[in-house]
Length: 372
Image 1: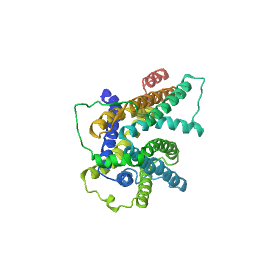
Image 2: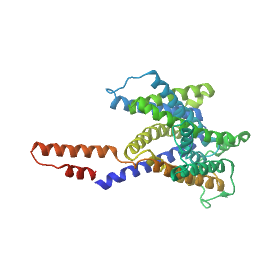
Image 3: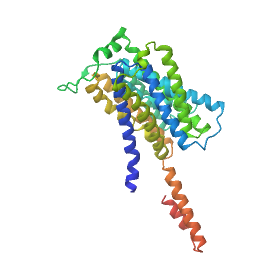
Image 4: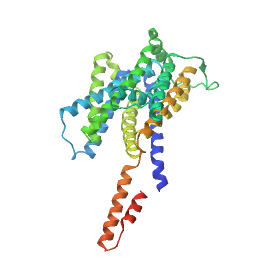
């Protein structure tokens, strides 16, 4: 039984990364089908907001902290940076460059978060320690990898020479990417989505302290993001037919992204962070890249270049260096919930023994607690 409990966090995090990888592939199919990036982002956030609001009403209906203006402003900013703006930038990177590029550059988020936290004074950098040197070197390597990934291609790597699977609407997708040579828009969007998501992480940390109700704050954030994304799409998307969902792939992509990724991904990741610590969840991020790169090359007709592979490898190496340095500065993550439960059980045993006039020495109590 203990073995099963130990395997739960890694198995669930693997499922989350598989879900993220599947989302990127499905989004690419929807975009290739002609669906607007802005409309897709709006639909995803609308579905996600509806589900999270439903969960909030079930689990936290009778336990609502007072909602202040400061909390509303913070949820608006979280919805902007972690929802509407991030989704539009990330999906634009998929549309104008490739799914592999968008997924690879997203691994820069922990690096960008560290840089922004350092500039804002939330993070310290001690270059005299091994951890500080690792974080600095990891940041430099990851940034260099993002430059290689964004601006260098090199030779094409064809890993599916004898297999030809054409599931894409090539005419539409090639028209998007080749139109007026605007691939640079996708490159900048990919970099911009990292800064947007990192800003959300910093604001979300403050929001969690101001408003500890998890489901309600998440539903507020998603509702704000859905409102922003819908208004943005209504203002800039002139074709009203884009709001129709005539094909199954458009319906499936919107539902999958809104329900599976937004709801399932957030709940499982939050649970794993509570169980094992924030760094534990970040370690699994490159797994989706390993899944997306060959899948996109096979199913999405995305060309895989040597520069993409080298850049992604540098980003992953830099990511793990920063995570290693950060882990050395933090206490080892423990299962706080189970530890607290076991401590209470110990106290109950001691109290019960005292009630029965049994003698329990301090040494015995300490030895029991030391095993927790």
